[in-house]
Image 1 (spheres, rainbow, N blue to C red):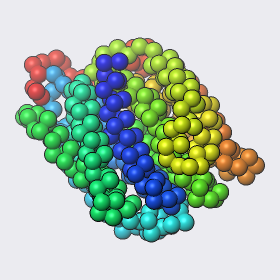
Image 2 (image 1 turned 180 degrees about the vertical axis):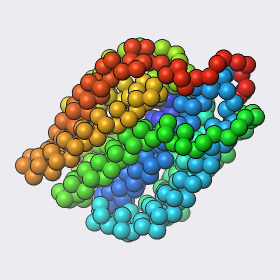
Image 3 (image 1 turned 30 degrees about the vertical axis):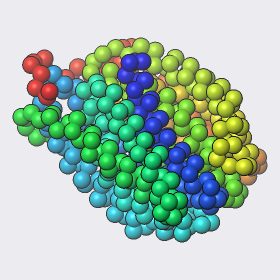
Image 4 (image 1 turned 45 degrees about the vertical axis):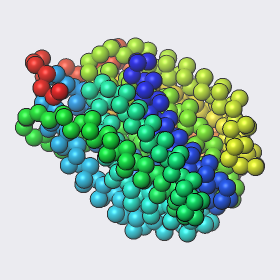
Length: 415
């Protein structure tokens, strides 16, 4: 688990968290409106990724099950076909509706719309990178995705100041720099998978979608709830949205530990390798992350703004959220790869059914801290639901994929 999870964490930290943090750090010099624009823009990008996540997740799980037992090319071809369909279906409406979307969440919709024009238009590049990384992870290789993330991160660090300030493109320059960095990284990453060609009959696109859909639904639900929370927080002013965005970006550096554990558990389970104590790992990771964020809250938030109070308060309250959330995400990898992803999704939705009403109710009573308390309550309900459904479920003891999903052993055909 550690061997697989550590590269995944570094990959997620550099490709997902660091890119957003770098953009936020550079645009912070442009004021609160710019910070709010990047916050809303990156939240919208996460929502779009949630719509697509079924594809790379399905590719990872199916390649893990087939590796050494059946041809891999049908899975890869189907993954790329779905990439094309989803890229058009998500990116085009996102670009066309960027202005109404921006107006929902910020008092400066023009800045946000400028960011969305580029970031949503560049989604096909982002999606393609996740397909490549999904293929590699299905083969048990988490080091190459980590390398790809390092490359992208380094490029963003170099390009952000050039486009934001050097070319005087402001907020939109941050989005342009990110898309260019991802495009260069994708060109390099594709070299890692072009050799994976093997004969084999076609694979129904529905199989990839069905396999990854619960994970996509989970991510999508989180993104939608995230947008709803941004709207609630926006009712308290632009400064609160900016502080929330800063706090979220900082917290993601810790949350990626949980997602690294989930992907490692999913990979091992899909490959019929044992996964031990994911719940204890997740809960323990949640406690450690909560402590670290509380210690680092003030100095780190101070790097982004002269008034870090909202961000610091958010990170303090998140101690109640991170422990149950860490346990939920870690066990989710086993449930996803062992065919119980729909049960995990049901537990997640149950938590949100509690969280959203509480967010509106408590925020009217306690202000912004009421939103943070609702997050903790929702995570606790989701974890309880996942554990209740998980007890006695198929493969719960060892975390193995159902035997029916694996074919008889034969000579490796996908290498």
